[in-house]
Length: 128
Image (cartoon, rainbow, N blue to C red; front, side, top):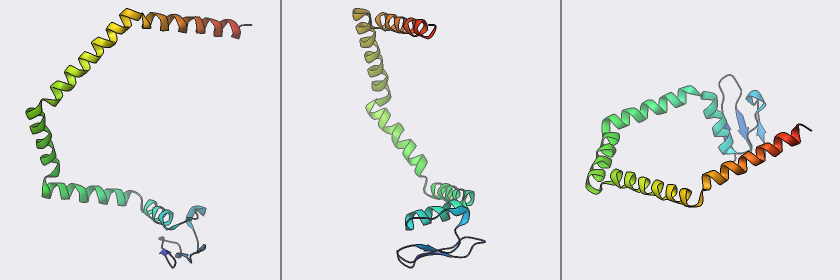
């Protein structure tokens, strides 16, 4: 890490001597370590870095067809094992069990009553 130099357009180089930074730091931001210095430089380049990364990733995918391959694999696994159907059935079963518990123990009614009492106490305390 010692001897690392960070350059910014329109600013003199910022150098790390192993103990502190030297040079003009944009916007008063003083990086504490090399990782922060790299982040500052990346952010200074901003949108162009993100745009470049996205276009390179898109080109890579178009060449290698990764997204299409992953999508086809997911569809194939779902058809083979019926995962989506099992998830739907499982969700439905859980919802039915929650409804049965709610009806047996009157959870919703008791919760609504408790909230109503609490709201009434807050309103009467606040109006004094």
